[in-house]
Length: 218
Image (cartoon, rainbow, N blue to C red; front, side, top):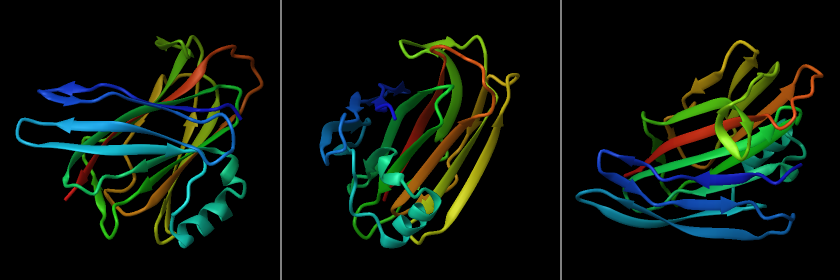
């Protein structure tokens, strides 16, 4: 499976300035990590925190991992992204995208690590967009053709509970917007799977899944 990339972009909305964070997956299965600084600034409040992405993560609740293993037995081989939610009270914005080719049967995981003995809130402004790009080097150019495929998103909570959404991707729809399935969370994992249902060749065309997440810690 090709190495994924987690890209956090700059957002400037009504005077709110967020730092830029570029996190790339390591190219091996070793337990390595990349840590970058994330700074949130508002007119009255400044906080500094750190977001970390690791190729192999540890420390998730046993019930969550048992449920994940039952859903995806080889989950340790999937592209995995870890978001460590800061413990300091504040409002944090995460914007990133995951790309994969139409022909690729794809799975990626997003782990959210809650602060110790705390939960966090996923704000109402959070949005997820699934779109189709001509190529990775021109992600803002729509693809000429859209595949016929299916995609699922399963959320696993720290208690092992699950919630699942499913999309039938068809050539007539240019995109699929959605919102997160949970509002308040502790540790959790998102499992996103995609499977192509036709046998056409699409060249460099990509599925692009954009995450615009607002996380609130109180």
